[in-house]
Image (cartoon, rainbow, N blue to C red; front, side, top):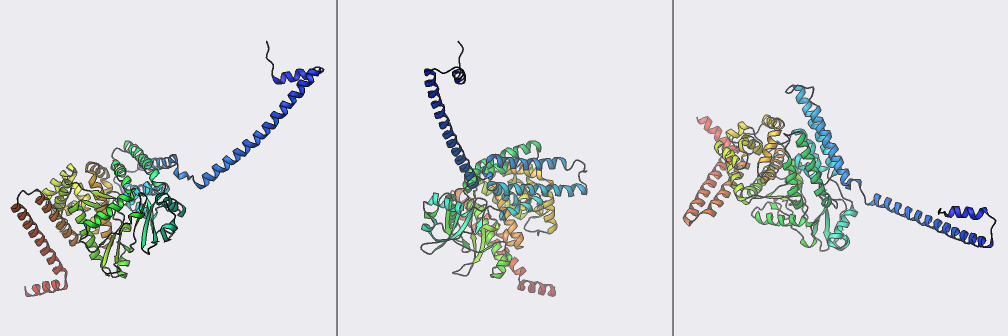
Length: 556
């Protein structure tokens, strides 16, 4: 039997002369069709309205909340495109140029420069973890070509800023109160912005001035994904260029980023180093306000000053540049060699100098305690003995302790990387050979030539060494700007700390009081000899010393 549709039925009804029954059916059908039509119209209006509301809501959310930069595939795509462009440049740029010619070196410098600029632009676009890693690379003087380090150094001044609304939201979420309930005043313009956070000056209700460090709201969520992106791309680059072995960079980021994103950890580090170095009257570590601190917010005592590399500020405020350099060396030597607890981010923005408002004495203010390296005792002692050997020119010691620290047959390169000195200077003993401009140029040139070997070396040495190398480079950069690099006082302070650290270790292992006394007497004698040498150098450089030298020459 053939099925009929409503339309066919309607057609049949209309093609015959209507009977009374048909008329009733037609009226009923018309009523149903009218009702359906009205319902369809209303449904269309409702759905149109819902579509409009949904679309406008989506548009509003898109404009207010959704930043394209937050999308993982956008960030990955940007990073992948940059990596591909840099790799293609290195693969194709040198095809028609003979290796070793002047044209080759000029072209290589240009490729380094434009690749570094692409990398810098990627870091600025993706922000957060990318800027942090870029800053790390920019600090690796003498490990990377100069074109990279000079280009990436600008990332310290290119950090993103969160809006005041975002800052208020983080404070509201973490502290459960509005700004007005917590502070009398809160400066909207940050004192400084970094890759992971920014700092605002504020005044508490009791009148104390504080610095409030607030984490950028999106960093926590993006960091693990960003590190995964870097790992994937670095593995791809290593597959194309087998000599490129920078996976250590990703491993360090994996380990350190969670620590740096935990501001409570930073607060505990600050208190620990303040207690540990309390015997240095020149060191100032701002006090933490724990009641106003969380994992994303750190409130501390406000301390101002000039950056440690600002010679003009020091000159204006009557601060002795040599004294600052010497005190910085004392502080870091003790952290590294004696305690094995090392502040690993001493870039100029984190080390301020000032005249203390109360005592008027010169102070070094140490900020940003998020990243510390804890050195294992055996590693720390081998590192102590290596530096003693480097200072004294003891080449058998240099080889022995470099090998113990994992350098293997690359120990000559390791010694040069560690000291940023030429192999000639290392052989002579770095304390006895002054740094020259030509030696600096030689080191930078060799950094570009031996990049594959340096990459291999950095993959060999213990992970603890990587942050120490970064710290060394940052401190050397400060000394270079202050024009105090490789001064005799820096080596004397390092030697003094090494002697104390080794003596402390020996005492801990001694079985008798007599043996401990012998170790203490030997330590005291070594420190006395060092003091006499320091006095000799001071007399030699003083007016009295020059006068005595001239007199002896005349008498002779």
